[in-house]
Image (spheres, rainbow, N blue to C red):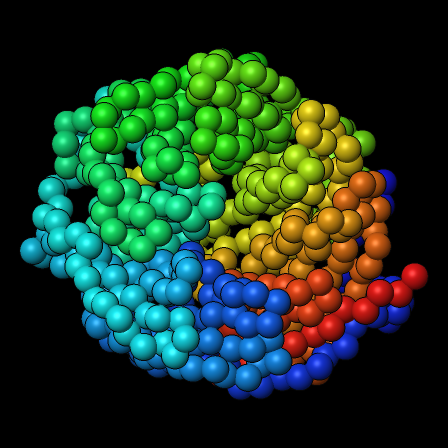
Length: 521
């Protein structure tokens, strides 16, 4: 088993393990410091992409963004300003067909109001074609009924919970947005924490963002809401878990209230960091980490068929001890464990399926360090958590696991690294950017500090999809020592990489780059 890692001694030798060229670099409006969970760049095709860029504004005041259309040669096609007032934050953005949509949440904690605004832009010139208020709701006071259902808090949300007031939308005022696999429907939902029983208020929209149907979904007592999805029939799927490791799924038609309930029985260990993927309108695949005494033991897959009303498969894969031991030895070169390493604080950060039915998992050690605070991977959403505090975000050892279409393990690899930054930047510079879409290889990019605290050493690797063996491994040219801005990184096509960086973790000057990755046998 070969480990993949970047460190100072190896830089000169690995530079020649693959070919790469920095084609061009241009100024890019990525000013300021923003915790964000939406993706900054989205490809339109092999030649163009859309990007939503922060231009100016203070952390908790009014801000100006820019929705822009670029060519992959970094030529600007058009620019459309997006104004975001005080107590407003961008919640999401995407494009479908001939329109781009930007969603802004406007909230008032004193008046207990939350409003979701939507602006639509036509794609040819970026002109505004409509501005709508999708929701304007009164937010009830949190009902602290301990017995009612709960909501799993993601690591990103834990990071956001520690931001300064006014910089992120508070928990109770949030709207969540998800899309069906083919983009036929969009689901917008909000948890209503004010009731004695937990409810999710859900609305389904069509491709043009016209309302189709709405309704309420109950989260049963003793259950934890993990994920909401919507299929290409507009039916809503809810994935829930129990403290003892049971996973329950419900597919509901909001128009008729017809539903199908399926559950996966627990095993001998607890399940955390649950992620689900739709395999079709009638089938679902759920991946989860298995933990015992808070330590990572392996991963599980379950396949469910709503048409047949049964669980068709439920398998467990234990991460081999040999792989763990080898990974831990390499990890000590980056960060020595204090005392016995307990394999805690792992998150399932990515779960992907390719066209051949193979599945890929990215497991990463993620934790928050702050005085008087202990991060728990199984934390539940609660407004009492949401208070500003100084803290550091850490990401560490990462596993890449591959399985075939029958859920049989193909290969396992790891990345030894340690990344750390202040809570204000959140996950913008940390973790791994992974691309699973190419037929022959898995591509990974991440940044680590080199002789400083800045995340300016840009590590790139490509793994063979069939074997997991290294195909390319090296450090991208970074002459101006830019720090990684991960939400803005993507592959324009098979060989061209778009990268956005900034001068220093607190820098307000951004740059966009085009790299060409060259095959070298």
